[in-house]
Image 1 (cartoon, rainbow, N blue to C red):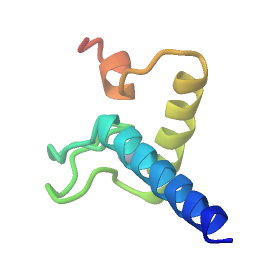
Image 2: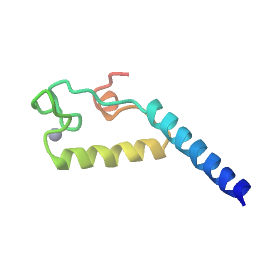
Image 3: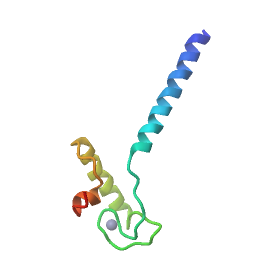
Length: 81
Ligand SMILES: [Zn+2]
């Protein structure tokens, strides 16, 4: 019985490590004083000017990921490749 439990624990740990490694590969947004969606000037600690911009950014980014274009939206919108 412990073999099954040991394998289950091993599998869970492997999945968690894989998920962490995947997340670490994702590009992180940095605060630069501009909204990452509409480019509005904002406080430096923020990434977006409001929740709508954040949600729209997430939606457009999800579309880019589904279509294989894995750049940040800002790079595409402002041609900063
Ligand atoms: Zn915005």
